[in-house]
Length: 498
Image 1 (cartoon, rainbow, N blue to C red):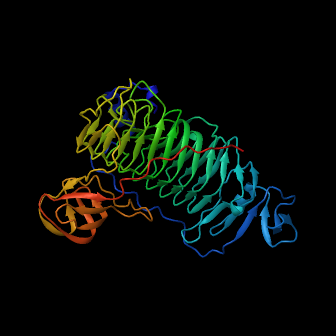
Image 2: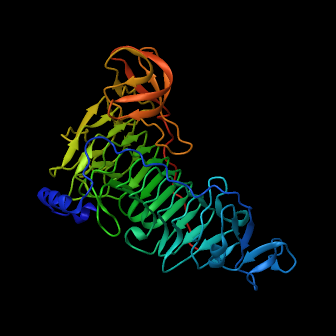
Image 3: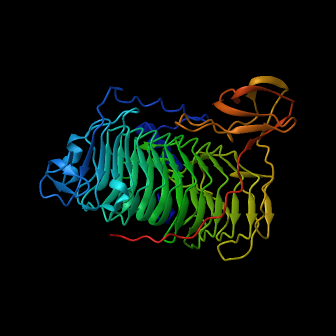
């Protein structure tokens, strides 16, 4: 919900809705990870390569010549439209699309498998544009192991929708000029887990990427500019990784993360936006505001999440706002925000809401750098204390500094040895979230500089499972080893619609 449209529902009303509607109002421990979504049966598949070519005069063409783009003297199968290609796809197929404009959505009828994915891509990186005025241009509905790459989705009602779809890859595409308002005007994941959205460009959407009631997704290396509302939105989703994205919004906010209050097609779920990791992102700019709760780098109202090693630069509506408002932002606790740089932000580098929450607190900011930030009037400021968060070993300077301090995020209650490490706080650490290709944090002990990698976290016993045994002293400090000096954000890109 945009804070410009604040809702004045009382806490009593929230509790009444919860008791009637059966909303998830869980306790303090993070929810268990999603069970691995079962893939479709891993069966042998004859891989096929076929084509979509809008210049064809005959379709289907069973004798397509890729060199001459003609029908009759070749050996391949081709269609002149996407709809026909969608109708025959199967596991192991690759559909290569020739240059041109296509007015039907990419909507596979079948799934791939982990061993034989179904692939849609442009032929030899030719300029392929999909424009669908009355529905999303990319639709992955109840399918798995589908890859879509190197396609330009332009001037469509919405860029794409993944619904009840898992283990898919959206890679290296360009998304421009979404027509719809609301969450339809973007790439939206609904009840969809273990997907990867990597290396894409997004320009002029409404909510450019929405992760709703979805978990264990990787959103990485994307370039997002200009959205009428937000660039990345996580709504009642757990265990997602948002990494190394560039976010610049001259219209409104960059990121938002909170629970679901039943707006549009969202469920009503509270206290269920946990353990999301945001790291190495560049929050390069959001538009100006006269209030700290309007247009933020991140409007943040989640639980037990990690926000680390990000750059927040020149955000004119504020960098991070720990939001409290009815109904979707009343649980803001257990978050760990460390190793970030807050540089030249206006309307506060860090701010927090004041409405009485249902549960809030134990939000810790460790070892961040705050430099040349200002309040909403443009006056130089220091980060103020607040009941919602605790400041630990942060640096405040007049200008950016190149090196962040060593941040000891947790301590050991007693001496010991082994591969199970008990700590006073395990919330700052990451174990890979059961996402393929992700590994847990490498940690280091303060006393001996021994290192090991986290393979699992037990939030009940407050222990880390490590990949090898180590020995620690009582009161030993533990920190995460990792690059905290990512380069500053680069310049804006130039986007064109076709």
